Length: 160
Image 1 (cartoon, helix red, strand yellow):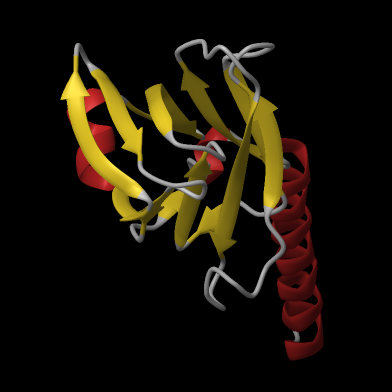
Image 2 (spheres, one colour):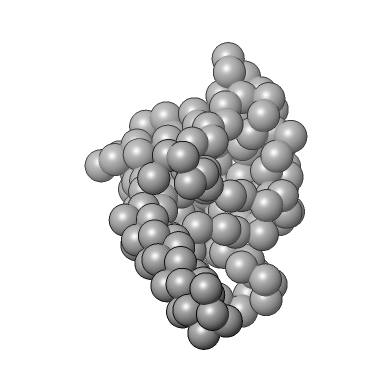
């Protein structure tokens, strides 16, 4: 086999693998970050800030509303790897109960939420109560931060 033939075959194999990789990415995207809460007496604004490598404030936020009309808020994400997130749960003082947070195949509840999503601002108390994360918002802009990377499940070549 000549060098030219070997290079052509290598190029074809590379392009085929690239196509499979892109196909998996597009087939799986967009990804969701899902927050499930206990019902509220009002609808609240929930805001999600993403860090995809340029910091939390370099990206526009994603907004969803829930509480009275919906207890499950789904944020569609434009990427599959996130270096950190900031969740602003609600927009007023009072008690908010987060039942779970999901990203890809990962789901956090109770003590895991308390450990992974730290209070940053306008939160006077956070506790694991009955397997749920109970937050007492002390101001109009409560914030929780997770600086751990969140990665959607990757596929192996055997699974394609």
